[in-house]
Figure 1 (cartoon, helix red, strand yellow):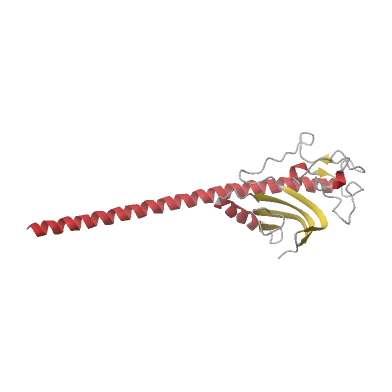
Figure 2: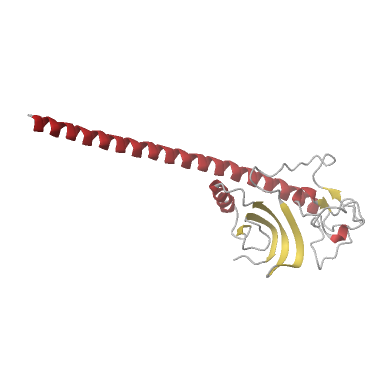
Length: 219
C-alpha cells in the first residue's frame, strides 16, 4: 500500500514538472513572438521615416535643377555636376556667404542657380524657402551629401551625386538593419547601397541613395 502511494506521488511529481516545463516553453515562445513583432514594427516605422527624408531631399534638389539647369555659371563641370548643389564644406565657397561649413550635411545644401553668377548660393532648407528637413530619425546620424567627379575615398573613386545616412556603433538595434533592407527593396538595384565600415565613407553601417551614379559602378 505504501509503495503504491509512493509511486502515485512520483507520477504526480513528474506530471507537475512536465507541466512546468511546457508552461515555461509557452511563455518563452510568446515572449519571442512579441519581441519579433516589436522589431518588425520598429523597422517598418524607421524605413518609412528614411524614405520620407529621401523623398524630401530628392524633390528639393530636383526643383533646383529644373529651375536653374545651368547652375551658377561658375563651378567647373570637370569636377562637379554644376547644376546640383555643391558640397557645403567645399573650398569652392571660401570667402562667400556659404563659407564656414565643416561637413557635407544635406541640411546645409544650397541651390547653385539661385541667384546665379555668384558663389553666394541660396540655402535649400530654411525659413526663407519654406522647405524643412527634420533631424535624422533617432539612432541615426544626419544625412550627408556628395557631389563630385573623380574624388578618391580610400581605394575608391567616386563620381556622382548621392546622399547617405550612418547608424553609429552605439546604435546596435537590430531593427536598423531590417529598416535599411526594407528601404533598399523599394528602389532599383543601382539606386540604394547598404554599406559597412569596410567602405571608406561609412563609419559603421550606412544607407546610400544615388541621385546620379557613375562610380563606384552598380555591382
